[in-house]
Length: 338
Image (cartoon, rainbow, N blue to C red; front, side, top):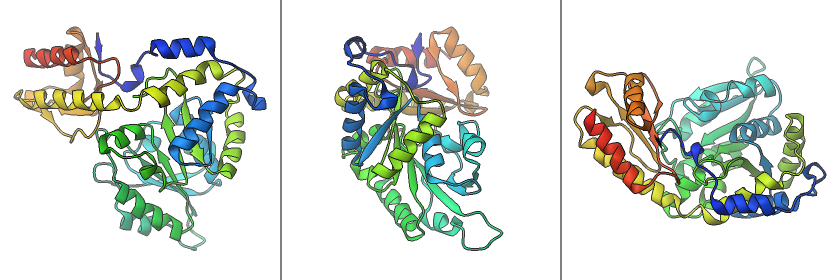
């Protein structure tokens, strides 16, 4: 099978497996796991933040950020198709007791003036705005890159209102590599950031949240409350070190394969690529074939290709470390058969 469902399906590299086997470990709840400490220090430095915390998943990282920044009854502003709103099971309401207020974006980017207008005033009938959440790259916008300038403007709006900004940067390294800039160009306009080690970077598990020292100390307690206080966790943190040191620059290869895939699909009548393919995600509308996404996904699977639905007639294909150039050729051949 050629698995294009997500970049979460990558298998750990040989170097990652060896790092897991040889990892020096200790009890991380006591802050005694040297491998985790090394990973967190490396991540904080790369992200331009004072401190960082290893968490089990991107969703847990986002939930911890909301819990740390907000009080029950607060309102969180975020883009209407953002991962935190769309794919995390309403967790910020269930755990943090906050409500969401969504804003329609353009390719995942919210208009700063609309964000400013959505920030609550002092009316006792209204909830306080506790947090603004951004997403970069934006998954449902097809891996779209939200520009540094857009992030800067929203951050300045937030600072004037004394509201923190959290970035769901699960695929933020994809944005930095595609733009050819340091990841800190994005993170400097955030109060906190979450990045996934287990997507394009290829680690088998884990994410990082980063911010100032005070934020991370509070976040550590929330991680414990959520059951994320782990013991000899260096065995699963070790691949994260490999991910950050060896797997970032190669993301450019995923982007090139995604563009090759998109260009090939554009040459096939009835299939329409509906995103700009900034990074490693291709969205294809199949309505021109008078088919549903479910039907096309089933036909692809029968021919050895795995994809996911992104709507009644839209499917998503995602390139990653385990997808090779010849497999993109095979995928295009299958689409031509369809």
